[in-house]
Length: 403
Ligand code: MN
Image: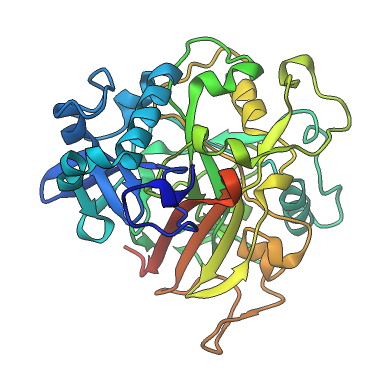
């Protein structure tokens, strides 16, 4: 379906044409509704269902987020997607639909779903190798478990925030090898991690078999896992990331349904050694999502998601294989997306090689780690049907002085 076939005036190359239809939660004043984006407009889904324009089985009526819709499962997801496509492509629906459309710029974009639990993985071999070299110089960069399981940690769901939310510089303990004792203060090595997050719709109180990924996962968002490297380096052994990451995690307001990403499916890199049976998928694939990272408007990196060693299906199978339950709204992020070259790295500690190779921004100023007032924006697109691109929009945030 090309964008030209809609009654909306969209360019063929619009990344938010009918082939995409990402969901959101948006607000005006004290009100909030679930919505779907078409072009640069949002359809109020609560109003559309209330007027019987779509049949979501009540999943949008009286709702402020997407959680109820996400929990409804693939048959309802597909019925709604087909219904929306029909509304946007059949001219006779224009009269009923057009009054329910609002300009994206006229509304407040909120968190699209209520975040249940948050897990962050570490699934880029290039990123794990780079961080191993930087954090444990002289040792083997990849630890012995890395190619046998998707390494991850449980993060903090309560401080997941929507794009545009300020990020106050965190305080904490840090101790460099030369310091005799730790000191306390604002992080001096504040960084980003460009990631893609996957969102659970249908919960299960049992392990999710790897081939059931699509029966449970609704869609994907962009994630910036802000990271205070000085806090992280002092605290992370032996139990992993803690306060160096939990202060804020930003996500994009657009939840792209996996049904919009079928053309972006791509074979995942071969895995050697062979993985255990519960991590073996009938179809071993990832997604060809191309990210871009902008630092105060300067494009500084283009991380390729397609190269990730562990797939989203493997991550979900692994995080539940011990019997851990999933809930609607569980968010699990990929880990920093880094490709093989420096201009494909998804963190600044890699991009500047621990601050030893400063970046030059467009205004002529150098950067190693983030300064107060700096803004980082991560965008992404993926292949859609018939040569289109699927837009993820952006996740952006500005560093403010410590609270
Ligand atoms: Mn991360």
